[in-house]
Length: 209
Image (cartoon, rainbow, N blue to C red; front, top):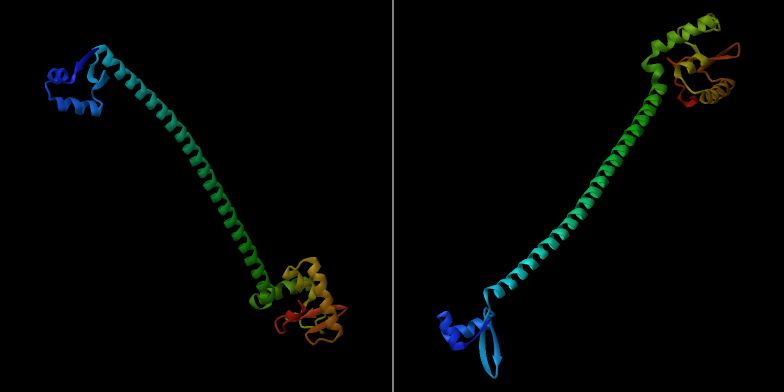
């Protein structure tokens, strides 16, 4: 290490004294004041290399710390991304289930509507099939007296309800309504051997069904 006066330092670096003072202010030159005189400190090559190595070590340590911090941040982001992806997939599954349920409910409603329509208008829409099936069953059971009832117009209540495919509970209630109407001498009904007959091609029985 050497100590040079401002003048000696200016001569050593081949610059002016003012330039030396500027370097001291900027910190590019080290200086000390002894007995009111300012000296410029010149370090040996070994001494100047030690701070450089220290700075390099600090920089390397900083880079390593930054790498660790960034890796931790990446791990957090990857976990968050995975969580969001799982949430999105679950939402899609839930929405698909809702849509499937909606379609099932609509299908059930449609089947119910079609059943009601078929029940109400079956005798008009498919009258021939109704009559043929009823005639076949009634002929097998021998329940119709041809002198009393025209077989091609009248069908038994039992056959009619069978073709309608009502549930047993519903059939029971419908039979009660028809029986009550027959007791009131409803002109739309005919009674033979305690059995009720109806003519769906001529009369509307919606109020009794």
